[in-house]
Image (cartoon, rainbow, N blue to C red; front, side):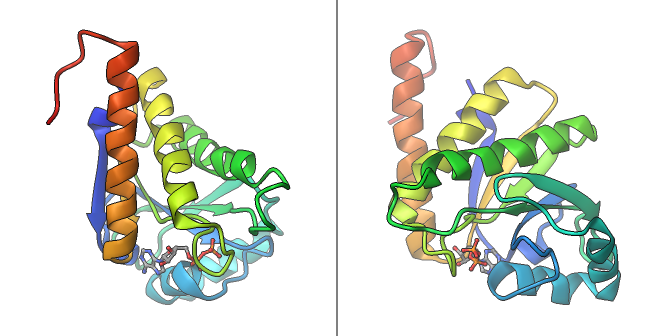
Amino acid sequence: MGWTRISIAIADITKMRVESIVNAANNTLLGGGGVDGAIHRAAGPGLLEECRNLRGCPTGEAVITGGYNLPAAWVIHTVGPVWRGGGHGEDETLARCYKSCLDLAVSRGLSTIAFPSISTGAYGFPLERAAPIAIREIASFLKREESLKRAIMVCHGKKAFNCYIRALRLQIRLEEKSSPNAPELD
Ligand code: ADP
């Protein structure tokens, strides 16, 4: 089961003591507002310098840098889709962001990763639609990939937290249906 290694927290991702945190960046990787700005401020100028050398990142893909002054050793930068009404492949691109980050973490031998709610701030992706996509993608990845020990969804407020909890409960129900011997959860 994938969901057993997912945690959901209300926190500031820049404070997370995990091996890697994910940044919801933009294509330039040169910093911005929201979580991106917070990560750059907390990491210090070394992060921007390393990002500059990477020369951008396509939407849906991910790149990795050091964490500099952050408690996390690594930052995995991904670029989420800008919401354009839902008919432009936004769901698939969002799912690809999570998968790209998880693939990169595993390829570097990392065992813990913390995600912000990608695309649901300035990029306007509806939270209620993004949360089940994120949870489904992470859970199915964890099911296949034993080396990743924990993925944490870091929510910036109660509304996001409730949304991700609902999405996790939905995922548990789906996994229980497809695996009748799974442990029961109230
Ligand atoms: P995007 O451009 O991908 O929408 P944003 O940074 O605007 O990225 O928002 C993504 C999510 O990150 C939003 O849900 C926002 O509330 C959340 N967020 C903003 N700051 C932080 C932070 N310090 N820690 C965790 N999540 C954050």
